[in-house]
Image (tube, rainbow, N blue to C red; front, side, top):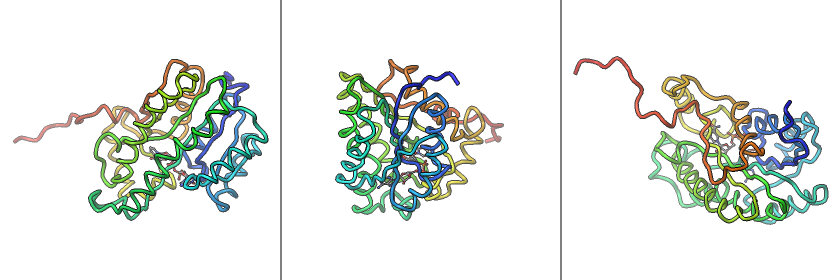
Length: 264
Ligand code: NAD
């Protein structure tokens, strides 16, 4: 390993299991020598996250429900007992009622709109409000987004609106934290089969569509997302902030793929 994150400490939020994008990022950071801490949502997921954390030499595994400000406070208080400072934070958290990740966006309820925005958008800001003082000499923050923020994708619905707001909050947070040398970026990943993704209608078909229509003619892997995330966390990207970096086999540049046109 090149040791690009040697001597650096990072908090990884959003591992649910070994398919999680956050786990791909954790592995890439561990490979480059980072020391890691993890948060998980609820007891049941804690039992899955602890053995994964152990695989990358971490026993700093803390519960955090981002819908609850007191829980976020408690998480950073607990973390503070082990770490006075850290260098990076990864936010790979999102949620929406799966009944609204199919059909029309128009039919979204006020309750789920608010919950989706709270968990998937505000939580990144809420976490950085607490993380700022842990990065007195600068640092890096990364969140996860999707192309459904930019263009209409089938079934993504309220999550698309949330990802748009998340991408815009990345820009505002980058401006606020830039003077402290804390960089804030987003990584826009192509579709990957995870627990969260399984809630999206016709997800298998969306993956197939991306495979057939992206410049690389395939989908991206959890490990590829992890490697690019590692770049955005490390000093390799020291001049990059407020950015939304696509790791999607190039899908976002395509208007229409050339085909043998039918006679019309
Ligand atoms: P995942 O299910 O493995 O991860 C989602 C995580 O969000 C879980 O760990 C879950 O515990 C956490 N979470 C949800 N509600 C929470 C709460 N109230 N408090 C704390 N944690 C909570 O799925 P994933 O695909 O790895 O998702 C990670 C991020 O990547 C999400 O923001 C997702 O939108 C984004 N993303 C996923 C894809 C994809 O195709 N899988 C593509 C682009 C972006």
